[in-house]
Length: 192
Ligand SMILES: [Mg+2]
Image 1 (cartoon, protein in one colour):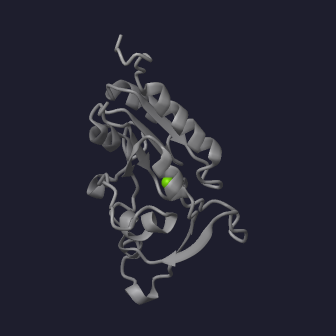
Image 2: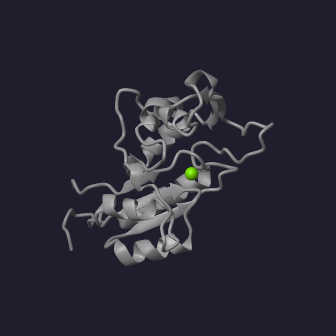
């Protein structure tokens, strides 16, 4: 069976970088990185690059393997955009030579009048009806309602606590969700 796998849309800050954890206590299993990606420098308008304070990012080097074991096609859905391939992916153990696809938000990353999260409409557009799960710390019921109305296919919007990041329970939930999507063939190989 060669049907497309569902998409797993990955936010960085929150799910992979539990930035809201207590600042003086690095979460267990995480390493501390200090970095100055282009998107971070761009937020410091008028500040010379050398004076921009590096961004502290906590990353868990086991997350890459855990994500790759899931039956999904991985896609970045983060304001880091292409910086996620350059700065994040390989540090969590994803293969350095294989960039993940990136949902570009660019100048469209603006507040929405309907109250949905800024990424939501673009995520629906990108998925184009394909089943997807989305892990993010800034999604809620209003986004679920929007997706139910505008996305013609299965979707899971799974909120992640930015003080904890992705946990084993989250990985199990994602695996279960994907497994429930797969139509099962009977044991003789016949399809119903
Ligand atoms: Mg986030």
